[in-house]
Length: 286
Length: 134
Image (tube, rainbow over all chains, first blue to last red; front, side):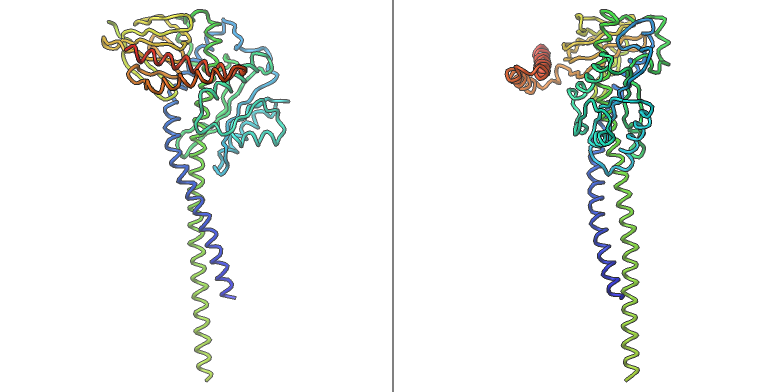
């Protein structure tokens, strides 16, 4: 019995070891990719923030203006742009953002979705949501053309009256250990927070050549880079989450191996003791 | 000359942050000059060059689409790309130009492909112009 037990334990140690090799490799890959992605996300952040605060400011000043991007009296249909990862094994990264999006669209009878990332596409296809557009494998090196594409689809849906509100779901990269799933309102622009705006209101900003013309040109650009930055942030978050979860998996595997080797050694010792006992009692009997 | 705070941002990071004396950029309606104490002003930028005067020296740069935002505190240029003339890789720009021309020939039917190729061609030409002008 003891030797059978030992064989079992040995087999388990081996399987845990090979799993650990995989998780360890994934952790290393994720952390080296994370460094690059983090640098890119952080470089893009001032741009993103400047654009977003500009967008908020314009929104606050547009109360007197009318634009196709301003508020509509009734919000019937909404468009959700949901950014998730292309791959799993990233801890709670995918499920957090997808759950947040799912909860937000619960009230809607028929929400429209632009899914970015394989996991996001899979999730919403499985639940039979109408997907207006889907993009996979673009996160690692997002191009302006892709982001502009997505923005254009969203804007077309908005201006044609197909949807009355656009929300963006992405994961904010706070630190390699902390990532927050975020729900951001993109359009209509005047429902954006506008705390900063009041200051410039009295001065009155000049829009060249006219507010409407500037708006129609600026807003697609703002949304394009918003999407670009959001994808960058999400990708860094994904890698951060993957690194952390793979690190945990590796630690767990190490712990398991330690416990199993202890068990193995105990079984081995027990076997030797038994054998000795047998020999001694056999010798005594002679 | 009176200086004012200037910030130039692109998705790749902060290109410049500091004092400037004057800024000339190409907006969608024509060239626009900004000096200190300009009124609050927002305009979209097309593909074109920018002339920025810093401590008496005029520096030229290539911009491809963006936004200029002038507030009392700070003038910000938010550009999709912003390259100083002396940092432009002329060889790469020439290659991009040739590639874009090739694409335009190929993409006769496809309106979207054509638009992208034309945009890339304009960008490449702009960068070549800026780089060779200095």
